[in-house]
Image 1 (cartoon, protein in one colour):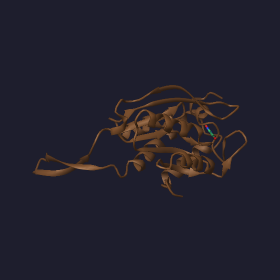
Image 2: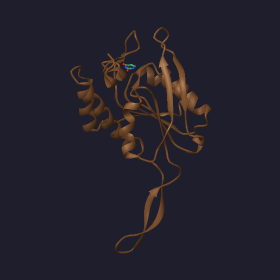
Image 3: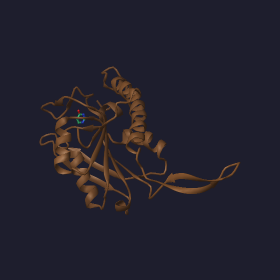
Length: 209
Ligand code: URA
């Protein structure tokens, strides 16, 4: 599928299966979310540009690769996106973080913004939008709208699961946003949940249901 990177690494697939299972505890779910966050972060940053710097090893001077440009921005959608954050920050500890507060109106399934705080210079940084579930696509589209309004240029999205409907809608609105996901599931149900899915990611992660 164009613009979609399916991360089929066996470790990711194994951990995702553990998370989907209804018997997975809150504690395990949270741990696995962080672990997969780290692995997906590794994939989404695979082609980051490098520059060369001169360093001195114990033996000699050498030209060595180093990340080029400004630190990237991780942009989790509250609240479930936060589940990926610690794992990603472990891999990219100096990343900046933009918090995007959106909730899904249960009647319309539309995204409603209640919080937004991002670094000033978004235009100079790669922004990685983070939300475990790309379901209807409404929240992700609203988040990209908001990030672009705040000046963001290149935006990539990382999710755990995506529904075909969400991918199609996202790419209809924002064809420039590539998506990294661990799985593309069958469909959405009438309540906007992903099937087969894993239920409500936020509730399972925080033990709120
Ligand atoms: N959000 C979730 O947490 N789960 C879904 O299946 C869809 C949206």
